[in-house]
Length: 178
Image (cartoon, rainbow, N blue to C red; front, side, top):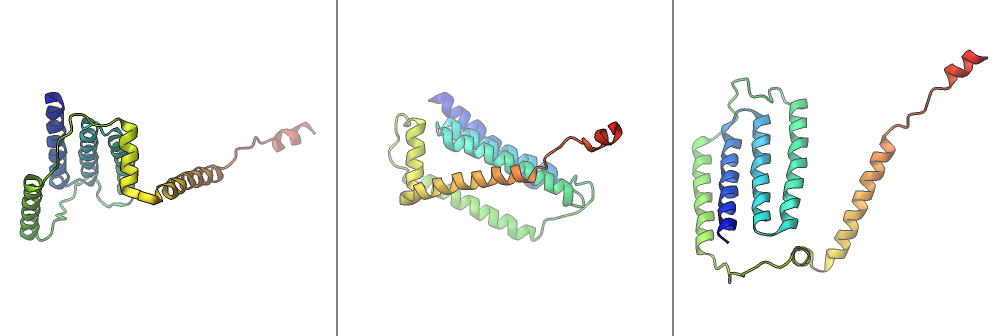
């Protein structure tokens, strides 16, 4: 239990630290990587709390999303490396005040909320996944599962159709032999 709390604190502090780096760096590329590391640390927090499905899902989604975001930033931004002296922040005093108020509200909710009884051990991963699906989707779970499989099939089919078929060039060989 102490090791779990220790690693939860370590990954939580890492997530906060990388979250601060996102806003402190002038490079959009470094910001994307810091955001990736922050979200990965949150995924690791889910893993420490024995919610394997949410942890792996968080890590996989954020790795894909941040990779795509970094690629598009390099392709389309004027200065993705942050070498120019641009200042992208606006309304600094208002944003600092809003951040302090939001952080205070989040801390107040965390400290004053009734979190319910503490369970000794979490249910296995299959039960957690089923309970999460029922909690989020209710009666529509089968519909969303079917839609997910259909979308995945459509993405695979679209990729297969978009890839050109490479055919060997026999016409030059036939002309030379005649």
